Image (cartoon, rainbow, N blue to C red; front, side, top):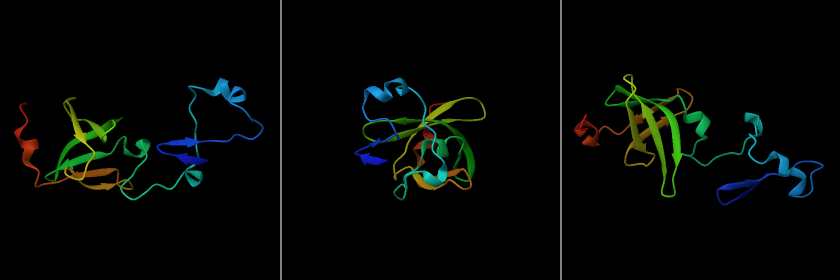
Length: 119
């Protein structure tokens, strides 16, 4: 597997042209964790982020249900216990810590914009 910008180039054995693998377009590809590409620090696979509990000021703020990959940065889609969705940019100004092993994301306490929510 070769990395090209934000994409990966995969070579399948016995498939030597674009035409040979055309039937795979739109299919999902599964990779064993031991064979996965090593990511840079503070970079995570989306499937590892889904299901993470998000904590703000030591209280449950929501759970990651989706990740939007935008040009400027990723955005975590959270859902709280009442089914209300919130969007949190995945940037250092908002995120204090991501602990994939504990499935927990801690938001920065000193960012008080969350308490000014119109809801």
